[in-house]
Length: 368
Ligand SMILES: *Cc1c(COP(=O)(O)O)cnc(C)c1O
Image (tube, rainbow, N blue to C red; front, side, top):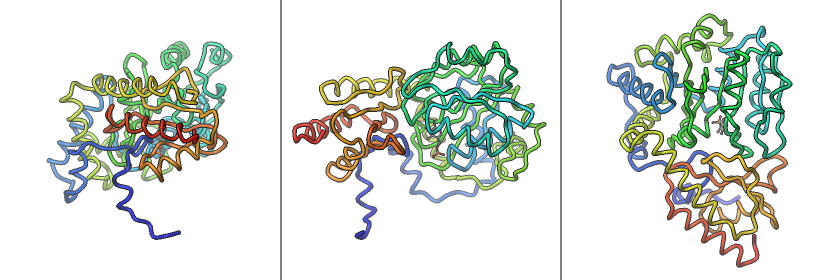
């Protein structure tokens, strides 16, 4: 291995699913000193963050928002630990590596569970759900956008199932929040999880848990064997815009800037429309390339692609090394089968043009 030049990384065009590119105003904060945070001024920033997250998630007025210093998985784990106990019985949609992560978390924390396993690239259906109707479940865990396969699940179907069966609905919306429509109140979702490095387009390090009033009561009475992940303390501190421990203060300031930018531009719907526009443009422009889009049920955040002639991972490496473009490779047994192109972060139609030009060039050279 030669010496690594970290400066070479900074001019890459980034079409991954996170971390993604940030706006100039968000990036500027990254160069500033990190302020002391036990102050009324920082509390104001946190309370505004809570207000705007609730607004964009269409959460009920009584909902609470927790900012966890830790990547998205930290909030998935905190949710499993604080919302459920070994007396529960939960259903998990396991259609890829993020669904599998919920399965592993329930195993680790002794939460009884059953899995629903949609086939690769497929959405959830009535037929898949109906065997679990009226079977005494208490909770439902789903990654609304299973980012590993690019499938966006029919959340209305899941929500109706949960309403009929009186289940706590936990939604990992980490890669979907601000990219796809989501109405926490209408869906009667009890938990929505988001992360800083996906469509929120900030550095990684903060994840966000939005809790319904109903689930807050449960969290306040459940016993949790953890100091950092016991959310009772976090809920108490959040009332005054604070956290129990030192949070990633700089990223929380960047999140504040970003939420304000979105609000000023018209709110979450304008951001969703922007991402939808970039995704649609990209999907239209790859029609002549030897690619197959692997699902019919897509999020606006990502296009999952199966290249017909060549290893998906080779395309990732060539674009990275020869064109200064990152697309998102897949892992495990999909490594050579699927790559993903993200549409979130500070991307434009011009950026799509650069990627399409690179892909057309590879195709001309017989490398697709
Ligand atoms: C990115 C992502 C996560 C979180 O992964 P981290 O690496 O822990 O941030 C969780 N769920 C989904 C669906 C994701 O896309």
